[in-house]
Length: 423
RNA sequence: GGAGAGGUGCUCGAGUGGUUGAAGAGGUACGCUUGGAAAGCGUAUGUACUCCAAAAGGGUACCGGGGGUUCGAAUCCCUUCCUCUCCGCCA
Image 1: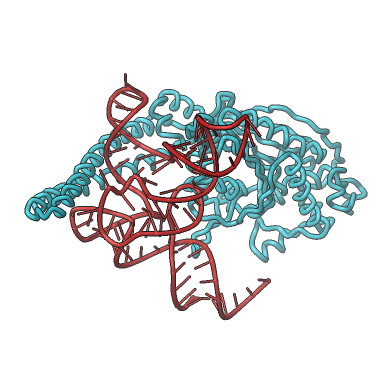
Image 2: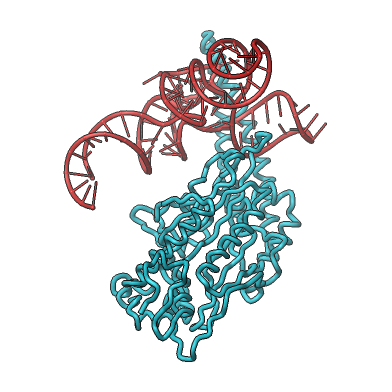
C-alpha cells in the first residue's frame, strides 16, 4: 500500500495519478486525511493520559516504599478515574486506526509517469517486437488438436481426476515441460538469480504481504482446515522471504528465481479464452524476483525485461512486449511490461510473462526496509516477472512448429528434451 | 495425534511485580592506542507513532499475538499461535 505520509503530503498528485488507473480516489483520500488527523489527535490524548498514569504509578510506588499508605491510596483513587478515560479513548484510537487501514488498503499503486493513458487492454502500447511469424498451412491444428493427435495432453483425464483446468501431460509433452523448467532455471541462474524452492502453500500474512489478500481472496485456493492458501505464483512465497526484514544497502539488489506450480481458481473465466492450455487452474512457472534500491529499480526493470526477451528469442517464438496502459495494470503495480507470443494456429497473441515494478507498494506492506549509507531507514522497491509461464509457451511451441513430420523442438531446448521431434 | 520444554534486542543470554527499553557477553560502527594488525581502552548500537518550524530534546507503545489482574506486568492469570524434544504415524 501507499504510505500515509505520501498520501497526505501529495494528495492532489495522488488523486490525479489514481484517476489514470480508472480509480476515483478523491473521496477516499479526503477521508484518509480526515481519519489521519483524527488519529493524531486521539493518539495525543491517549499518550498524555498514559503518561499521567505512568507518573502517578511511580509516585504510588515511592509513597508505598516510604510507608505513606494514606497518600498512596489517595493517588490510587485518582488513577481509577484516569483508567476509565484511557479505556474510552483507547478504544476510539483502535477504531480510528482500523478505519484508516481499511481505507489505505483500498488505494491501488500509482502508475509511473511513463505509463500510457488508457482504459483497457486495447490501449496497451507495443513497446517492441521480434521473431519470425511462422507460415502455417491452412489446415494447421490448434494445440488441443495436436495434443490429441500425438497423445500429448489428456484434458478429459484431468477432469476425471480433479476437474477442468487440470490437464495430464503425457510422454514427450511431460518431458517438454520438465525441459522448459530446467531451461528457464538454468538461464536465470546464469543471469545471477539465486534459485530457491519455496513452499507452495502460504499463510494469510504472506498473502497480505504481496497484496493477494484481501484483494483477490476469491482467486486463491484456500485450505480452510489449516487456513493456508495455495500459491497463485511463486512471487508470493519468494517475496515474503523478505517480509519484516531489515536489509543493508550492500545487500541490494537481491535476485531470486524459483520454479513452482501455480494454482488459480480463475473464477468467472469462460469461453474461447480458456480452451486447451490457454487458462488453467494449475500450471508451472519460473519466476524471477528482485529487491532493489529505490534509485535503481527502473534500471532493474529494464534489465529484467531484456532478460525475458532473451528467453523468447532462444525459443524462436514471435514475440512482442506491451507497455500496459494505466487502466490495464494490476492493483499493485507501478509499471508493467507484458510479453506475448504468437500462437499461429489460434492466430492470437498469448500472454506468457508479466514483468512489474511495484516500487515500495509491496515493501510497505511487507515491512521490507534497508539502511542506507547515512543509516536512515527506507523502503525497498520490489520487482518480479515470469520467466516464464509454461502452458502458453507449450501451446505456441506446438502450434508454430508443427510440420508434416511432427513437431519441431527449438534448438536451445534439445539438450533439455533429448529429442528433436515429437511425432 | 499423545507427553513434555520453551518463545526476551543483530546474536547468545539474565531477569518471577516498581527509574527494565531491558543486566552481562558477543557482534558491529566510530575514536584512542600501534609502524601495521591483533589485543586493550573509550563511546555508541532497535522499531513505530507522536510533540517541537527544524535540530536538540520530550512523550507513548513494543520482551510471539490477543485479553485480564494491579496504582504499576517481560515478570502473575486466561487464551491463541509458533518452535523444539520424546513417542506414534508417514515419506
